Length: 440
Image (cartoon, rainbow, N blue to C red; front, side, top):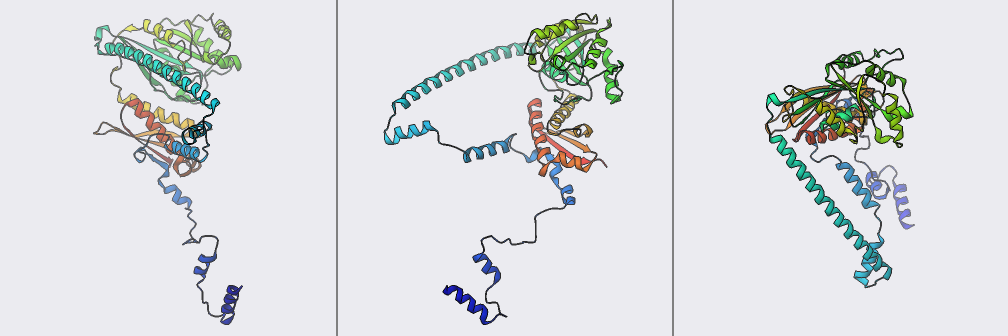
């Protein structure tokens, strides 16, 4: 009360003069901290956002591998929400206070025995796996060391066609042993022909993954996406072996008459210069195996197919038999590709496919299909690393903002994952630069 009277007398004695600095008084008695510049809001204008560097991903700015932010966030969440485990409580009672619970002792012994069993099983599995890999590696090394003469070389060109999302790219990647074609749940992932090469012994098989094909009700191909579709249809007769693949699980759950017409058209006539195979894909998704026989019986009377294979392009079921058959069909002629060196053209195509796959994974609806994807620069540096610059060109500013994300988060995630996958494929350091811009 005396303090309040003192302040009241000071204010009433001379109201024209201010004896206390308002800012000092506010700092002493205010509950909220005062900003040094209250007028600045910290927000930037749209023009500044457009000119910011958030639309450019540069892998040199990220020294740590993929998942750093996720690991940090997970550590923070674990540390903040950690709870006390009962087994640690029992251990503290035993070590510090000397209190031993009989039930706890019994459960501890059981846990120790189970842990010992797990450890021994893990060691046994690891030793068996290492032995199998060493044996396989020795066989591959022996095969690779042998130089195949040109007159002994055998090769085969295989085209893979089918409806969109039939599993063509997954089969191609599994046969080749590495990712050469983008794989996505979205339709029309493959937009041009992709080459994948598999070399075993003296036989080299070149797989050509083609865009998805579909027939209208009239039985003729669709005219939309004309260049892509016409290119795929023209190249059908250029391969030694043609694989017609379709999704058996979708055929059983949601049959599509357009897919059936495509299979019947390819198998209606016998081509003397080409062998055609029918591959029933995604059998791993079918629970009742007798349904697979029903699908095979449905198309068994088509004369154009030499063989019918039931496979899983993703899991690899039945692919071994398909590979063995293709190896037996190889023709005696020189190889088209060097089996030991990956050509620069193939590497460029792989880099584009990997970025496109990540793009389709993170960007949805019609936006990824309207983006122009261009390879602008490709350099092999002195230290053996690669510098790859690609531009993603959008038609609208709104699409650019969606692709970039908040503070460049979305394009950054796409670039980080693509950069790490390219490093694992090429077995060398990769400096990936992605730039998002609007078409002028």
